[in-house]
Amino acid sequence: MAVHQRKPGNKKKTSDAKESIKDINKEKKNTITDGENKESFSSKIPWKKVATRFLLSLTMIFAVYWTSKKENYHVFASQKDKLQLTSAEVSCSVSYKKDISRFKDCIPKHCGRLVTDIVVSPEEAAHLLRLSKKGLAFGGSSGGASILDLHSGALSYDNSFINIYEKLKAHGKNNVFTQEDFKVYSNVRNKIQQIISYNFGIPISKIYLTHPTFFSEMTPRTAKTKHDEYWHVHVDKETYPSFHYTSLLYLNDYGIDFSGGRFIFVNDGKNMTVEPRAGRVSAFTSGAENPHYVERVSSGTRYALTVSFTCDPKLAIADPTIKKFQ
Image 1 (spheres, rainbow, N blue to C red):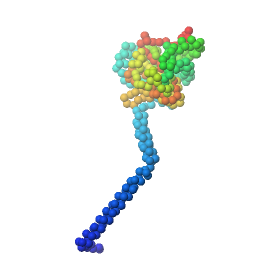
Image 2: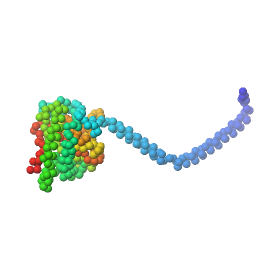
Image 3: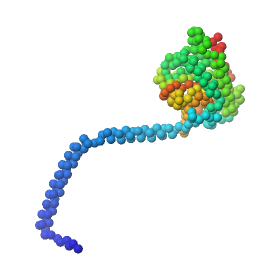
């Protein structure tokens, strides 16, 4: 067993002093070394790795943000799925109930929205797509959205509108539209009217085609006027007082013919998204219970037909005919 003995006092002090000097010298040496290290440290920082990690962090932040954003959307109707009939009920807004109460036989059994892919045939949708392209070829907005109204003849042209029937007559092109074009248009309108009648439980004879009813063409071009800005949230009844039931017939495909351009119902919880599909019909009550917007088209061209209905017979319009050229 080791025995520790106490050394004489003077020897201990001398030893302690020597140890202190050694510590001080060691400390100075370390300080010089640290200083040298600090000077060379900045030149040895792996800046590429730092930049890479910084970009990776930004990417992760964006991914988290985008994922959380996407979670606010519920796909009500996917482009990939062919739907028989899917619908959702929503509570009628007070203003809508007040307005439609004037037409007792036209009050829906419930407010809401529907989507179906079996009402309009692929051949009918393809025919109407050709029809819309034929007409829109004679005009076109300088911004991202163009319309063609076969009832009034309104056609987007640069930053305003012209009458397509007058233009075609002036150029001797009365054969652009055919009797078959207007027949298909009328048959499709009737089918859409029937599904609205069925889904909302109202007699088909109590809803009437109204204005505006029109083809639309949407592209990524920069908006030039307010008519080009289709992506703002709105309520149809506030924009068009004649509307009581709104429908859309999509003429080409989301994710194939264009990107963006989805139709989005705005809800307090998750928004409900309809992805356009050729021949797909989406319809809904036109009041404040169904605020919505169209997502901006980011590539390609989106084609659709808006068909609107009213309960007020005074605001009814007839189907367009070949007589528009006569």
